[in-house]
Length: 490
Ligand code: F6P
Image (cartoon, rainbow, N blue to C red; front, side):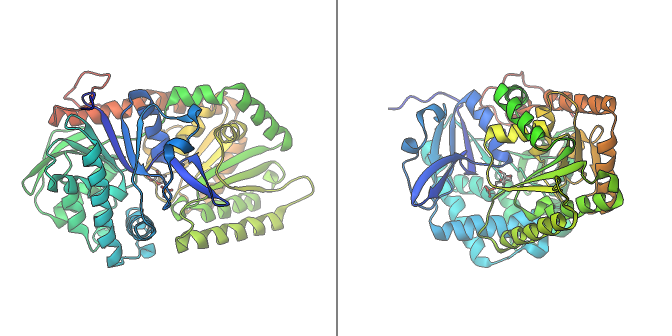
């Protein structure tokens, strides 16, 4: 019989950190993009364990053969293969046409198709079956994100009684929005099957507790701080908020590497005598890209001295292109970029440089290094790790972060970033103007403090915090680097 190390961490998420792309009928493995993978990758590299998820393709391939030996992870990868019907109704459908827009407070974008719900249940069962098959009784199953809310309930149905944790990477909406969900009771009841639920911010946790009160009934709460004990409908679980982060040391050291410095110098040389304003977003309507472009145009109108002095480099990472609002958004952004460039371009100066593709790591870090200002303006965001990556990559500590007040990251970074309302085109234009003129000393002070704050709460703190909070209620969790504490930190 296979010998299993005790207390192994088993991550279950919709997507694996490796995605399969098809190029002229040939499969190719690339790193998946997005906050979840950025955050969990370093943890798994450090601790080992097993990662269960979908490799992003409906055609099965041999993952082991596709990943070059030099890139093979030191943890296990267990693919869950989705059929095209499952991809359409579970991933594109319920996950991204129901939960994603609703939880980002955009209920008018939702498509509450009952078939999506049926498929969501079926595919959550499928993930649960894979988890049950591959997790041992001493392993800790940690389920991630909105695609897989029902996994614990499905595991319980098959007799799994051990501790199971859940972390929601996206916002949890306010009750008046959540109640629009036809399956609101089912979703809440399923969440109560976990032993611990983690949210990004105190506000998201507050929303969840209020939804329980409105939909399920009386809620008893014990404790204080960032982890509470909650009693409802005969269940007792822990609920906490754990703002997710990145691997500070890894980002800082990679950003300072010679290849990155050289590419950053090249970027600056190609765009001389001007400050670069950087936007990096997955193509998603929650990221507020048309509002950002409009605010940038407004800055050029309100402050004509900025013309020929700043350029926006807007990177769009392709995503969920098969969903109509994403497709329409791309067309709208193309049109806006064309219109703004048509309106303002002069010989030797293009206001917006527009990139629509996945960036490799060196390109990404070089853009972070080259840009003096980052414009991170989502309409609603669980955390937004681009904001943190940008600060940590600013190894010279001479750049400015402009950040939406509706990103979870604003809770932590608000004192030293320039905080804006992304819907306020004058406010965002003023922030761009202020950032452009900000004296070096103020830039340094602000960026230094932003970086220290992220260093203090890096991804290893985050995982330890979650596992310790879980350990308080369930004794068999994977060891952390810290002693168990009862008191909350925040
Ligand atoms: O938490 C949101 C998330 O799951 C993140 O991993 C990432 O930002 C994005 O969504 C990835 O989207 P997808 O897997 O649909 O490409």
